[in-house]
Image (cartoon, rainbow over all chains, first blue to last red; front, side, top):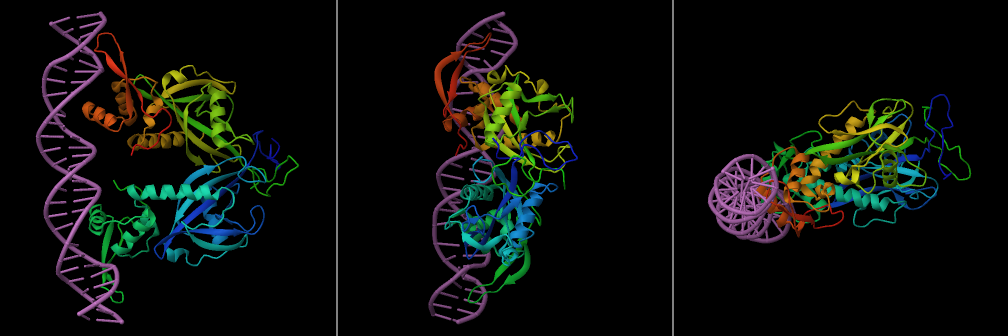
Length: 234
Length: 234
DNA sequence: CCAAAAGTGTTCACCGTACACCCATGA
DNA sequence: TCATGGGTGTACGGTGAACACTTTTGG
């Protein structure tokens, strides 16, 4: 009962006479590369779990909201900015961090490959790497559970939201879009039905341009119909 | 930047050199009474927002997980125990509490009326009352936003989960079950289609008993097919 | 001419929806 | 006998799923 602060050490304002745990945000950032769903992890430099891989994240500052904290930590530790971000779940087991009580507000994030291709390890992290979600390394803290829940949510939202467009580049072909759905869901989809649905819901707008590729018929390019974040199809 | 603890005042263990905000849980407990969806609120005795109504809730203890905290606070402030509980969202705006930084992990809860009928105000609260969700009083903090989000989630989950059974008593008629759905969704449902679906999914088991009511044909009693918490129909 | 992906419609089964009447009871 | 909710079946339309071949290109 004495492992967290019972009161603030800074003075000047009234504070509740109550425990003050540490609070972090952790971010599960996904992208698609080479037809695989990958997640960004950082290698921990310091104990606990030194050498293990962890989600990027860190402590909430006094004057920032949780979402800002997640975006800041992601930028600081990996250099990645401008991703789609959504709160996932708050993990608060008293023993999830061996040092002191740390409550983690987990977020998941999505971005197209080209927006995260230049990710580099910040000063806190020993290294940074992308892992296929079906080949994860040993993970620090409860980050395995966080990732599992993020995947569950991501797959569920594919069915009733336009979240998949968050990993698409500005211009894409319908074949590429379908490949993203198949990659995240882990199953093959029927090409004609897929295209029919996407166009029936008005999810994409044709750009009138073509993408030419070696030895293949050119494919029409599209953009997402709803330029920003649209959550519900119906 | 000096409005939260920067480090623990208790000694003995290593702690991160980081801010330590206060963390609470707040609970939006719903039940059905007289065909209305109602929520349990407590009247605040102390500032800030003294006299305003608020969700029951309170500070997370060092050694308890968040869900335990929610259940404990609900029991302490209202006497209610044994409800269905699910994490909703974490609210972390730096200014949501005027005194200091307080991050609130919000839960929503459901219980049948008879399990909450005896709710009484605990020592912290000046009073306790049930409010119809479409006739809420002035609310403290950001609790209006919390309730709005809880309602949204509750209504969404009705469609793809068996969450409605969490407000049903052990024995109920199909008419009562339908009334609960209609109350939460705020729309009328077709009786034949409703009964067909409920039975097709195997959600209920007939008890072979009847409920007699004055001036009406007796109704068959059922129990939920999945005695505990079942989340997904499909 | 061959490989590789682009592009395109129809059929069928099933599910959700709309809809109306008789029944059993207590007052 | 009347008011009140309990209880039951069918017909239709729309949606999701299955399914194969031609086109265009570069090598």
